[in-house]
Amino acid sequence: MIADSMGCFTSAAKDANLNLVMMNLPIRPRRNRKSAAVRGLMRETTLSAANLIYPMFVQEGEEDTPIESLPGCTRWGVAGIVGECKRLYELGIPCVDLFAVVPEEKKDAAGSEAWNPEGVVPRAIRAIKAAVPGLCVMTDVALDPFNTYGQDGIVREYEDGSYEILNDETVEALCRQALCHARAGADIISPSDMMDGRIAALRAALDAEGFSHVSLMSYTAKYASAFYGPFRGALGSAPKFGDKKTYQMDPANVREALREAALDAAEGADFLMVKPATLYLDVIAEMRRATTLPIAAYHVSGEYLMLKAAAASGWLDEKQCMLEALLSIRRAGADMILTYAAPQVAEWLREETL
Ligand code: PBG
Image (cartoon, rainbow, N blue to C red; front, side, top):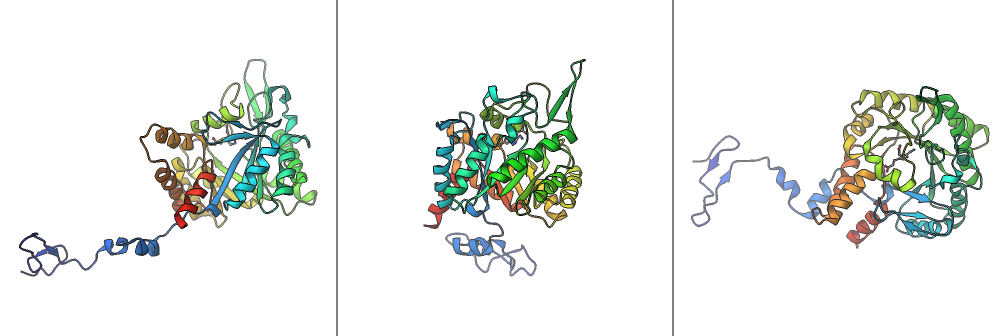
């Protein structure tokens, strides 16, 4: 009773004791999963420390303070961040992204602390580049940590209580901020504000001052997401009123992300970014097909915190779940990932290769 078509059982291999049967099945995908060595050969996507960018927070003063809303992360003083950057570089992390923590008394309506050459970010850039020159230093460009509104752009208030985020005035301020970072030695500028036309304007401003070597990572598709909550807690930068929906993207949209990608490419972005990451894997995948530019994805504070909280309660395995989440972002098509788990992940990956 030998079956001739796939999937039929045959009695030829029947074992009297174990009652084994054998299907006439020439195509067996499990052969490609039969051992660690074979699985390794078949693996389509990898995750390595070389893919990771670590977002870091830098504050005034000497102290390093743990961030309650982002377990494992720290608000660093300039001295502390330099020491940590040495360790990160030794762990194989190629790039950090710096965010400023600004005391309330230094905030104003214009956000002018954003282009103070003695502000915490330019000071941290100079110190890091002097101590760890091989580490790539990226900086965040946007006004929300610096203005009294907690909005990424310049705000015009009207008498009836309504307000507007001014696009072109904001772009001019962002150019000032970016030049301040470039003069301090930043390697990559990453505008997170979602104003129209800022990539072309930043490129022109940088080139005009001789910074044609400074790269631009555009927050191309940054969604108006509720998953930024823990980050805003870390910086004290939550909007004082309203929301960010007139500039950040509607979570319902994907074609709009491709429109933004085409504009960023035409304006001279060196690479693009999608944010958040795991909730927007379809956007990453679509963008991957639509452009030849490298793509980054930001595994944001809320995505990180969900895993940390579930792991802290004992309900999820932190290491396995974090690695799986980050791998899914790579599989969707992201070349690099901004993640608060970067140092921990680099340690885990190092242990695995020992
Ligand atoms: C603001 C900015 C935000 C994040 C990065 N830059 C928050 C926001 O847009 O309100 C979010 C990062 C995160 O949640 O991890 N320019």
